[in-house]
Image (cartoon, rainbow, N blue to C red; front, side, top):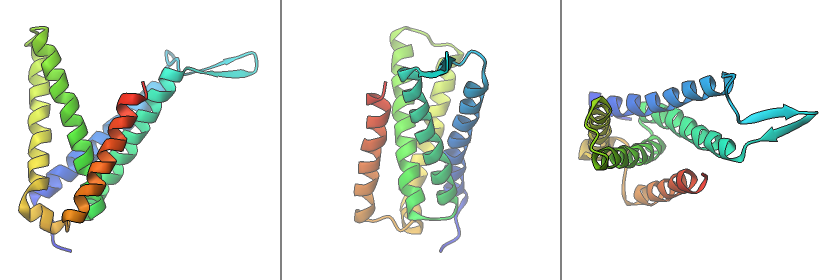
Length: 162
């Protein structure tokens, strides 16, 4: 295994940070008294379907982010697959947010924050697709298909579970 450079470490830490951030948000949401996902009513547990789907999406993001970031930092090909998938997904979300804010002509601090986020995500993706990183993670033609399939599965989970 080759030693990772700062670019690969940056991408791994970014992916790991996304997973940890989602974990913290999920813990805060579940521990909140205003959470409406689960209610106990006369010895029956009622589950809000939309909230359940939101928790499933968050859980997928947490697992993908933490596992992908860890494996990226360990120099594993599976980390590259998980990390690239998560970065592409969040890049699409961030660009969609930019388009929405642009259509509403809102160019305040939230617009600037999303532009900054897009730059961070794009930079990490460029680092992972660079030739030295692909060589370190042993990325070849056989790696792109699982990455695409995993991206389609994650996108389906995000877009169809609403």
